[in-house]
Amino acid sequence: MEENLEANENGHNRLPAGSAVNRWLAVAVVALIVAAGLAFGYGYRQQMLAGHMSAQASVANATINEMQGQLNILTAKLNEMSAAQQAAAAAAQAKTSSAQKQTA
Image (tube, rainbow, N blue to C red):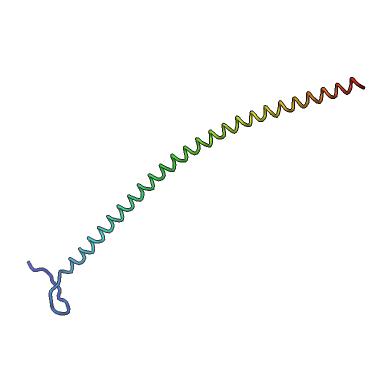
């Protein structure tokens, strides 16, 4: 079997024309495999980062809920103190007004 060899300008035989195409095809396939590997690696990394961010968000939400509960407790205590002060002020005012009525 004879191979179809092409001659260059100097008349020397070179590789068959099909082998150059095969070489470029092999380079393209390797480049695609590398690109696919990088894409899968990037996707995996992004998935891991999203999982970590979700966990951090859960912790942050739990902390916010705890702080909201503490704030509600403090608000209730402040309301109780304010109500007690208002009641004491009303009692003092009633006492002074009744004392003024008795002297008059």
